[in-house]
Image (tube, rainbow over all chains, first blue to last red; front, side, top):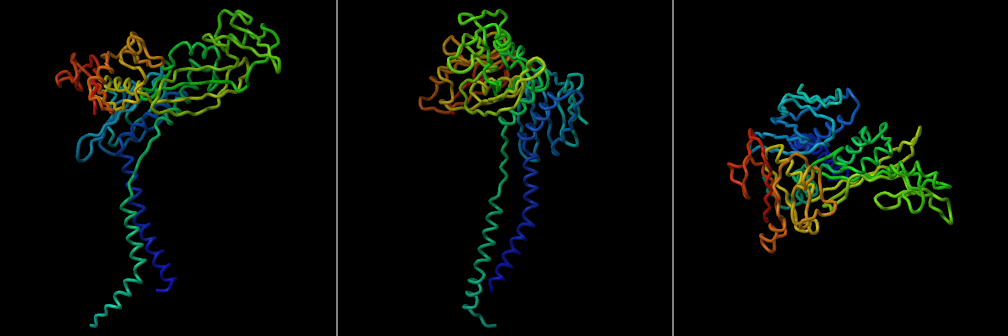
Length: 132
Length: 313
């Protein structure tokens, strides 16, 4: 083949790889983030930390991972437990910044993830966490 | 049909680079893996900055610290204002303006009251508040804080024990001075240490009713630490014999934790063990290491205490 034909073939093959590879890679990254108990619990801890020090009335909607999991908020700790399709539960516990600000996460402090979002709201000096 | 070997070989040779390219791209594709890293300690520093600069126990307005409140905060454990179980921290707040120029001791009373939190000011070099005479340059105010002369608007909250890892960031803040504010820098150093790990595992076991394990190498142990135990009241400390190791205490109220004999475990383990694991068990009934299943608290049980067990890996 002539050099120009080689360039054409190589470019074509590269484009084919990019088109077919990028999308699965993006999905893989998204899945990895969604399925990471560590990362999701850190995200929630960050959101609560920021609302704690925010002005009165600040509200944050936390979108929960779209999978079977539950979150427990208790005594400055967040425990997120993911139940995978196969295999044992994966859980991770992270700590929030504990301040004199009261955090009210309801009587049990537990929330299911699937089809749920969490509203974190600062009202009358108390951070209220509710399922939406 | 004529079977021409030469033609096939020539075709493969010509196609070689393309085949190689395809194989190379395939290799790249299948060697791809997602590696998620979260810089949790760095994130903590920024969130702590937000917490501290809006804490009314320390500031007059957002990011503007009040000298009197800082001096009062220096006298108490900083973690009582803001605590993260996973990491400890030290805060340094220092004005950028440098020393306060003076001509006589009497001009330094305000400086001494603000910086050193002195309720009784004793002017002069033999007292606790002084205008320091300089042969070259301006004279400046200084006051005695914890037995040492200090010549700048600066405060330190928290403490910095021996750490396994640490990170530091600086933030612009102000120090309230009458109707105005002095430009200052707040430096936050967060750290991960043996003490933070063991105390946090204790808290996590107590509140989540699950056992937590902490792994560490022998060289990560603070020098001289022989025991981890409650120091009475609200703190837990590392002890060297019967005395707490300097700076190795943490605010951890309301948790009944059994003493951990670190030295005894080290001596009782294999002589060449360099890696160890401490497991914190939430107990519903008293037990010794390793606790039986009947003594470990379940999801619906009340946790009466936390038992720490140390073993070589």
